[in-house]
Image 1 (cartoon, rainbow, N blue to C red):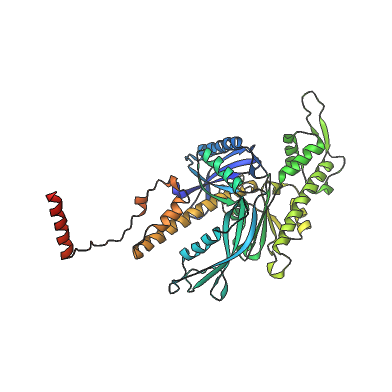
Image 2: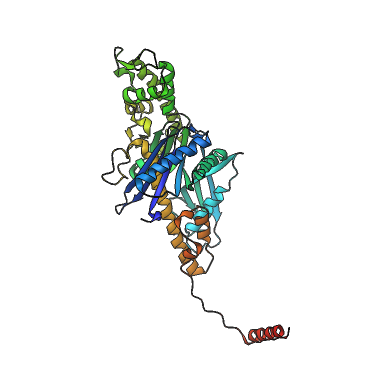
Length: 460
C-alpha cells in the first residue's frame, strides 16, 4: 500500500487523544485500518498546558495505531479547538488583468492568499479562510466561478482565527513526537465532514459536538459554512460537578455519569439509590439518582443555552437563514440519556444524534462510528481530500508548465508549504513532463566570437 493512499487523523482532546488511520475504498467509503487511543492528561479545555505529558500521550496513541494498522505513521492532520478560537466575516476582491481568459483555480488561490495577509489582533493568526459566495463583475451569489469570464473576482469569506501560541504548542507536540504536521483543521469542521450529509448542509443545520473540554458549533446553510464557535466547556464540567457535589473521586464521577446519568431528572425517583465504594478504610457512599440527574440537567442546560446563543448570533430568526434541518449532536457528550429531547425543548428545533455510518465502509460500523470518534474520522476524510486536491494541483501544473513553459510554481507552494516530505518524492521526480524544445542554432557572428575567445584562451 502506498503512503499517498492513506491519511492519519490526530484528535488531541481534553479527555483522550485518538490517532486514526484510514483510506478510501473503490466505493468512496472510509476504511479504518487502525486506531490508537490514550488518556489526555496534558490538555485543558482544548489547549495544551503540559508539553511533555501531551507528547507522551501522542506517542502512545500513535504507537497503538501503528501496531493495529501495520503502517509506520510519518505525518498527521491535527484537529484544533479551544476557547481562543474565534471567527469573523470578511469580503475581499482581486482585479484580473488577464480577463480574456476564464477564471481558474490560480485566481481563487490568489484571492484566498490575499485574505491570509489580513492583520489580526496581536498574538493571533488565521487558521482557515473559507470562501462562501463569489461575485464576478456585477453577477452575485455565484457558488463556483471557475470557467467564467470576468475582470473582478470578489468573495465573502468565513475566517477562523486562533492564538499563535496555542497553535504552535500543538505543532511542537506533534513534531516532538517524531511526526510531520500535514495540516491543522478546526475540529467542528472535521466533525461536520463525518456526520453531516449534503441535504442537511443545503437545508441549514447546526452541528454541536460535545467533547470532554469544549463544545464545538458549526452552522451550515445552502451548503456553505456560515458560523463557527468553540464553547469552553463540555462533558468535563458535568463530571467535575458530580465529583464536587457527591464528594467522590473523578473516576467514580465519570462512571456514574456514563452508567446512571440522565439529562432529564423527572424520570428518577427519590428512592433510587446507587452505592459507590468508599476510599480505603471508609464506608461506601449512597448517591440518589434523582440528585445525580439534577446535577447533570443543570450543566447540560448551560451548554445548550450557549449553543442557542451561537445560533441566534448566526441570525436563525431571519426567514432566509432558518435552519430547516435543525441540530445534529455528536461527540461523547451526545450519548447522555435524554439529552436529545432536552435539546429539542431548549432550542425548539429537530435534533438527531450524529453517527459516521454513512462514511464508514460496511462491516466497520459499531464502535468506530460512535459519536466520540466523529472528529477523528472527519480528520481522516479531510486528510484524504487534501491529498486529492494536492494531486489535482500537480496535474494542473503539468499542463501549466507544458503550455507556458513556466517554473514549478504549484510544486513549490503546495509541496514545500504543506510539508509533504514523507511522500518519498523529489523535485526531479515531480517535473516529469517537460517541454521538448530544440536548441536554438547559433548565428555566424556567435560562432566566430566563440572561436575568437578560444584562440585568446589558447594563447594565454
